[in-house]
Image (cartoon, rainbow, N blue to C red; front, side, top):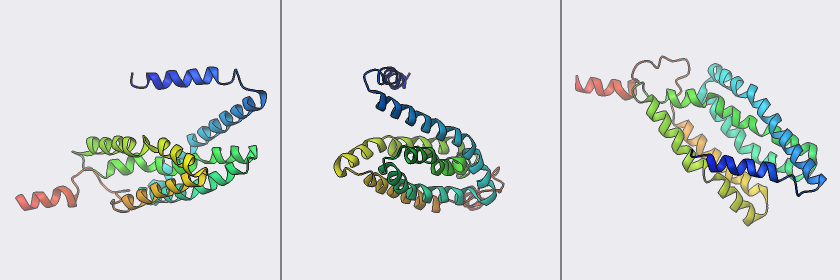
Length: 198
């Protein structure tokens, strides 16, 4: 129910937008659609691959690599868009989800493993949902304001870099529980309290 107006508006725009525009703009819309579809198909493979890779090299390490690549990729993305060459724009859009996938692949396990069993569902859910509200919700508004103020996509790339630095700092403070038994309370959380009371 919450997304009804969003979905309705999306479908209205999709059905009405191509009608009054010319052939060149229609080709551009199809090109963007194909590029986004290509990025989505690529993500179908890169998300599970990054999750698998995180089990080998560590979820925290994989997530931090993804955050660093995301911070740098914003500049490459806008450099490719600024060429105004359709082929490079398609490449930018298709590749744009790979840095995201490098973080999204290990994200569920990394977040869930950060909480003990008795707090895992509520802790992971609260963190995930609050991040959507605090960071994800205002991001398009901030990006639009930056573009309007600076007339350059590089201002948005700096914003993405700042967000990536925050992600790197926050992730650096987490413990990595990759390949460890997480079925019991963690020593630093539950074990110390139990010893003190016993």
